[in-house]
Amino acid sequence: MKHIKKYLLMLLLILSAIPGFAEKKSIDMKEILWGHIKDSYEWHVTNIGKTPIVFHLPIIVKSSTGWHVFCSSEFSEEPDALGNRPGPYGLYIKSAKDEKYPSKIVEKVGNDEIRPLDLSITKTVCVLFIDAFILLLCVLIPARWCRKHKVDDAAPSGFVGLMHMFIMSVYDDVIKPVMGDEADKYAPYLLTCFFFIFTANIMGIVPFPPGGGNLTGNIACTCFFGVATFLVTNLTGTRDYWKEIFWGDVPTWLKVPVPLMPVIELFGIFTKPLALIIRLFANMMAGHAIALAFAGMIFIMFHLTTSDVVNNVAGSGMSVISVSLSIFMMLLEILVSYIQALVFTMLSAVFISQAHVKEHE
Image: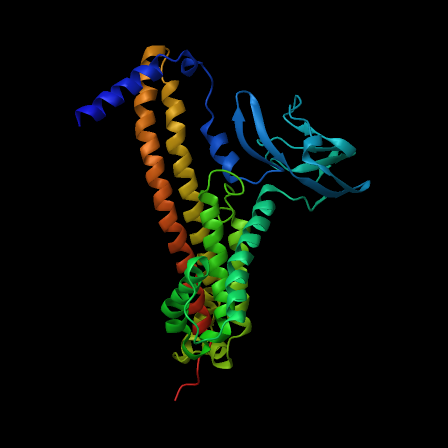
């Protein structure tokens, strides 16, 4: 314990002696947080000194003058007087503070600003492709082993054995108990949901490319999975499922002349996928925001007062606490990544199973 205190004291003294830490800058934590969570046309990795390390992504738009394909590096790094970043073909990226089109590509036609048809490969889309490629490798490599071996062969080892164990764990413990005899029919969809969400969650924790993209913290991604479950649930629903919604086994006065129960049941069809969407989005976005907030506390403490000595001591002390809390949050995020993928898969299986109502005896 004495050695730990001594090393911490030395760390505080060293950090407080570095004059660069006392440089006065305004810290915009809101911009830092949303800059990581929001989508963008380039992938900012880090800064080395004053030089930003950025991956520029393809821009594909159809404006009033036709189709244009170019690199996002053609947009100016320095914003103009209005906070916009001008680019080629009369296009520009609006300021992040704009209320109508924040950080979006627009063009000016006459006196109006309009959004062109934007099919650009943004950061979120790029992360989506990377995660899909990783998922394909995780599925196709074990599938190739299965094609080359018989059922009574020895169990695989290494990565293939890990994936076999993982897949069978989700199937036997989640899908099979809920779906019963229909497990084999819906297992491909449910396993795809689980492993894609889990892969996206884990890759979002990795702090450097190809990780670092908060895919499941983007509501467009979680909305797609929620809509997919909604369609599978209701398009495969049985006749008795729809009968219980519009003409359930309740007193007649609850159905006519005022259709109270049918309206409530119909409303419940949409709240189920909405719960899936919001739960996954909120949990994954909140984890990233909390981890970034812990890291941002370091810079806030270094600019706490007008005294450099007080700032350096406070910032150095907070550095130890913030780094410890950030590491704890990252470890917790690994567990949350698995739990959220499992919960989404389990609830999707429950909703699909509930739509397959058998005729009552």
